[in-house]
Length: 270
Image (cartoon, rainbow, N blue to C red):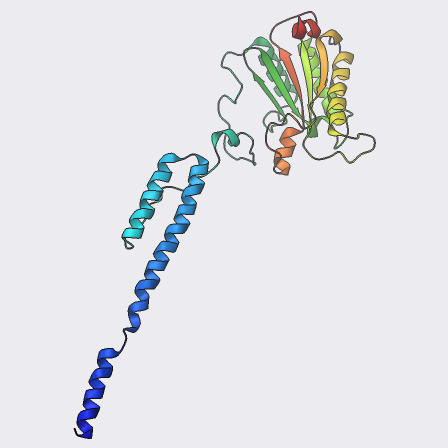
């Protein structure tokens, strides 16, 4: 066999045995598809924890279809926003939206005391309710008057500010015309007091509630109808996740019964 023939035959054998260098792309595509399916499955687990059974089913169906047909797009539904219903109440951030017509806890038929308190406070202090420093709501049994601590007290203190005294005068003038049992509730945030004079939030909340009771008694409210109660940080309106939320929890609340009675003790315990 001539040298030229050998070279031609050797070249043909090498061409037949040469590997296909692009075969790795198929393996890489399969790996990426499975990796994507894995992360979508993790996303599905989060949907399961959030309680969205329908969206979980749609997501898993997309995963299995994607494994079988890698070119098929996976539909995982809309992302879950927010939290389960049981958690939403305790989260709060500043809102720019207009408040609902009837805030939670309010009822359509206003009582005369509710109207008198709201009109008098708006007349004497036009911005307090619109700024959220004071809020008044009512249900079937109680009228609730919330006052933010920043309005009523200096930071870390329990002595009433001058504006708080003026507000108590307006409130007591109305309450004298509608004698009823009143509980004064002191509430703080969850930050420690860091004070030797006021060692805990239990002391601070109780002292603040007592200061309001003292002022109401001084302004002519029957002391038998009053009781101060300190809740410390154990009765938050919202979760203490940021400073805005903590400011909502630092408050003093007047719970005014819509049923008249001679004294608070008999109202509560007899």
